[in-house]
Amino acid sequence: MEIPLASIPSGSFRMRDARSEAVREVHLRPFELGNTHVTCDQWAQVQGTDPIRRPGANIPMHPVTWFDAVHWCNAASLAAGLEPSYTFGADTVIWNVAAEGYRLPTEAEWEFAARAGTSTPTHGPLAEIAWTSADGLDGPQEVGLKRPNGFGLFDMIGNAWEWCWDYADTARYGGYRSLRGGGWDDKPWSCRASVRRGSAPDAVLEDVGFRVARGAVGERGARAAQGWSAEADRLRADIRGPLPIGWTPLRSLLRD
Image: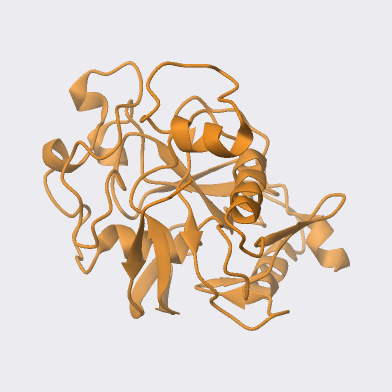
């Protein structure tokens, strides 16, 4: 099976955290990113079947949980003769940042690739680049039909939300993982390069799929790469004192 990948150059950009209003400069190594979402056909070539047996082999595979996505990445890596990116424990997933196998992009990788050198909310008019609620759809469309961005990436905005590697916020949302890009039923204001949401890694959400990244981006054993840091996750989860209503810090990180 071949997954078309675009070469994403090294670079730096500023990422904003909406809750804390903090802004940080992120420096990225070169990596590769799928030109499109992983499609139903690509999924089936690795897994043997699309469990929902839906028509439309060239639409984004959906719904996909975060756990589904990382397990598929490892299976696709093995099928391609590549070192898998993930190791699974009883309640943990560890990313080997030195592996060349398929993986989920970090949020920083995703946003840098989605912007493709632009500083505007989208890389072009939504009608030309994205499937959103403005199109009056009842499901995702075939990948690659709208105009790509400057890196040759299709549907980075709209069509289906995409899982990223990072936790959404280990202080507020526990083990939730991040989602980027917007989907076919999202309002235009929700379909921008900076918009993020999060959900449980085992959640089954109809408008969620994923695309894969590839490339060794750190030394073996490192616990930080491409704008993500396990230590930053731990420190954020280590919130003290009375908690705001609804906050669920990921205490398991504090045992590491």
